[in-house]
Length: 388
Figure 1 (spheres, rainbow, N blue to C red):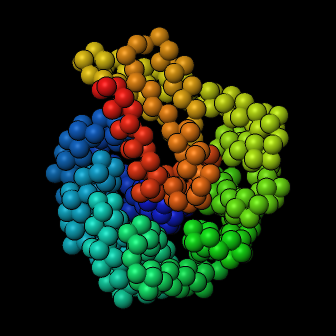
Figure 2: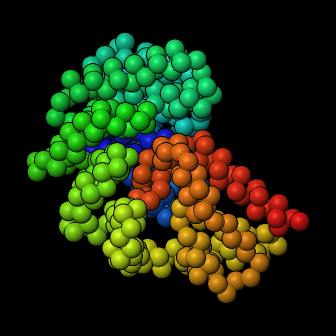
């Protein structure tokens, strides 16, 4: 079971549902059941009130405390989550996964030094724990990005680079049949533009994910396939990139894969196939969630405008603004901000990895610091135009 957070972490067994189930969650308690129902419906305060009642009745329930920490984590209240984990660790201190969960709270609030300190202390205690090594790889990838963006001395960047490669290789040695070590190694080499090395490891990760007796979190091999395709694309081998993705597009209705294929066909100048893939993706998405998405977007927009506030509707990077305009076509006073052409122009000069840390949406991913700055600059320019 794999979990991917906003920093691009790929690790095992800490996806909330899997992690809590390991501790027998949920216990048989009516208030806890109510809390879960509230949480699943987005009523966070009600969920917290009910779990508080449940804990007063079951003060020693580790799984319920871990659930409470997950709620705090989900609303970015990392300090409270840490306090809950500290309480749990007073009861149970022999599971590295709880410590990893605690360390991730520090990561998510940007205290990378404290997170690193925790991980290194844990490595001293559980040197061969696979989860810890994978988590530390992800943290060092963040550290590497920070050092690069701030133009740290080459010697310091190389030190982090060597540590990432060492930990990836260690993970491969610990579990040679697990794809994560190969996958992280491949992603890192792709990040530093060493395509030959990246290709070697990403091909192995993709091969492992395709084993019939092995299933991970990656839906339909989506992430290994996309990164392998990206590697081929960066090497100018568009036909091989398409060859990796086509079987997935034929077997599963996955709009993310279809959009990536559309981009690849477009780069080759094959406009009919590109349009066909985009149209198929749009049809699938419209069936899956567009109706609810449209309703919620209009509801939020109406609420904002009713309070006399300015409403800005901004689209994701590289996506056309037309879909948002269509959703809100009969609502006036909305400021539309497109991130299509600013990113396309930037990608003409620099690599994909300069602006995105992953490929979760097929045609774009979560942004790097530079990608976020591109969005902020574009937003500010649009706001200034409105003020004028």
